[in-house]
Image (cartoon, rainbow, N blue to C red; front, side, top):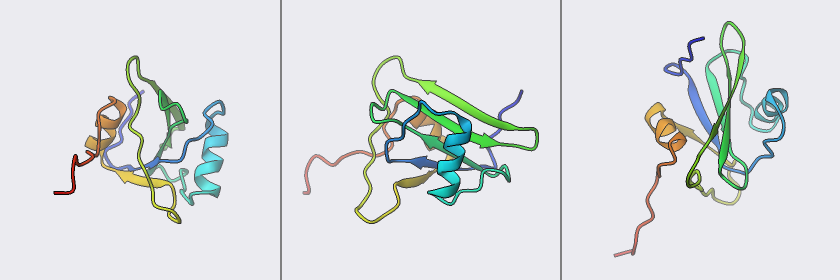
Length: 114
């Protein structure tokens, strides 16, 4: 099995999700609540729970569907914020996805305004 995400649009769901569910429930959340169509093979969605120690990625290709699970041994996945009234999701590039899955920070908080 080869996993290629080069031509895939990656969406990170910032709002904590219950990850006890499997592919079909996560697919339903992506489709019904976020309006993301995973059936065409051009989308991948990353879900994280409140603890931010695990994440699940769902996507599909022309051969089938995939549910990938990533658990960090040390640390947690970065906590990202969203403004009130916006959807709790953001787009990631492949290098950003790789950094996120390795537990690295995507955004840095400024120490001071000046």
